[in-house]
Length: 466
Image (cartoon, rainbow, N blue to C red; front, top):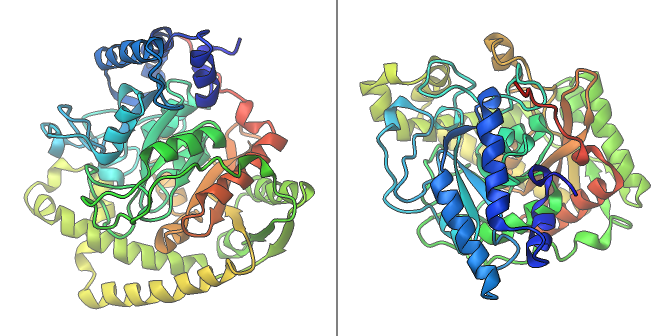
């Protein structure tokens, strides 16, 4: 039998329904693994064994009583520490919020509780979801399970590390400029930035009102679809929430890609930014794999990455500084130096800058949208290289913006990052699959077909054991 720590959500759910796996035994096995290994990865800010075991016992009782609440009943999960769990502290990995006890659950937390998930605790993040892997904060930065000398991507760093290390089969992250997809890419897992408005941000520490998303992080595409179904849906408490109910995102998953039209944006990683040769080859090979499975592949183009990044930067930092203005003025020394450096430029953008970026945003999003009249999904790179060493701050800061994720925060389209191989340095390679707005089912269909044809998602890191 597969080690319990590497069970997928779908596998664990089937075993629980067949009564060959106890939710309590499953939770205990994962808690033991976290207790033994997380000192190497620092994925968790707080492990909540008491909550986990109480939830596991409740799930076991529900199964015994025939009260099946769906595929997440009895499945452990953890939350990026900008997402509220009622009664627990939400720190955003910052000195500023060390006493910030949540009065209520975030919308997504309520949904996971209702689905019968087992809450394991809070996960590391870059400070306020915008800093980097910093060492001048109350908690150490998370590390990459494939090589703990390297960072795991961010800002949902602990979420990527925890899922990649086999501590939990699913976690929640947030994505404003790529912060679900970056750690998914760096840790060899699957991360979705849903369509803007698909998942409520109520109860989540904000960074940028027009760019923030909450998204699922898992080891398989199927599991990601199951988790999205649990957390999606309209929420009047979030002004950006779309008036759309959740749905079965697995409904097209087994249809394959034969006959689908796939647009490949190569200029993002071959011209606008020159990707590492092995990363570029990995993305090209992933596209060719989809062609070999029967899809029609065609190269398409958009405005350069630099233009997408400029729009994202002006809007994100302007909105972030509207949130952080008071703390930046009164408590600047309580931010990590990296966070402060990233936030402060937003204080110098004008209202004119913001409005010009907003206007340009509408134009380039319309141009991207027009491509979806001719293709079913778009494929491109995620990061331009693998993760840098976590202590090499200049290299970390240099490589973080070298990515192709921000266009889809600007556009709001659903974007899935998943592993497409391994570099000669042993770290994961990754690519993105992007779909029409609110067509996550098609994105998952293509991603699942790719995973069924490859075995990258079945490989496991060798964590330090001492």
